Length: 361
Ligand code: COI
Image 1 (cartoon, rainbow, N blue to C red):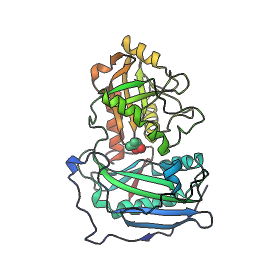
Image 2: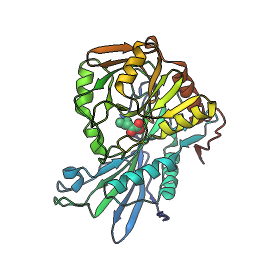
Image 3: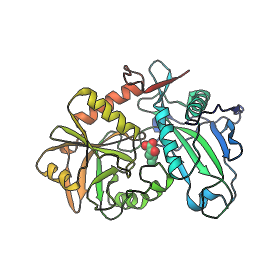
Image 4: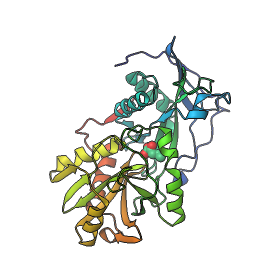
């Protein structure tokens, strides 16, 4: 495990450099960025160095920079929440950075000292604390990224890396908010295969998904449901989220077998639901099983889980010209309870028996 203290230089915005805050009622997702960012560099001789909190601004990179050519890039998605007591909380930040280090190792990037980066993140969010929204449901989205920055067009692991964190105040990820989405079951394109990079949060996974997403959106759907890359039969993920079903009162999500992102929200949902009792399973579920359960009225609910999307109920599934409604197109009681309880923990409105919340200052 890499332990390293980071010596962070802080260079604050001048009053003129500070930007006006956006209207919290119309934040959308990912359009506004706060005043500061965190950056650090890596090379073989110095390891992680030049850690800085500095004014948000552009990078200068030469056209030969490796990430532009072969996409050696990984990222994370996290949030900061403003509680009713006006304190600001992070949610499971070490788990996100642990996953980021696993993503790094999958595409030959150096590991970073996750505890020190959590401390850097706390300082960054504290400095930009006035950007953490106060309106209901709005949060500060946190985007840590690592890219290969060595100028070289030979294909190999780069020798220089840039790690940065930017933050942005956001509202709901889907324009539908908590309203159920219409999902297209994708059987032409696949997102990931066993042995590939599907379980790592690499930029490449997301690039590979945009064509299917666009085609589905053009047909009037919100997102696609991905099937496994070998048989195109077993359910994997929905859009940018993990997926859950409730069939005959059993809460089911596909197991982590290498091609699915190990979501932090997925894990939180599993832990919460297990603590309530009832049957909770991580098991393979085929699209035939889902459609048959829907036809016979045994599919009670389905929803996606993710940092950006939180809990996103699914109201309709279309698979090969066949459409089924789920819970009459309404959010179900399990999705509602999970959403309410998770948000109550994240915003500090209720006890945190799992120790997920990390207060800032
Ligand atoms: C997240 O849920 O945080 C993600 O990283 C998905 C992204 C496409 C917004």
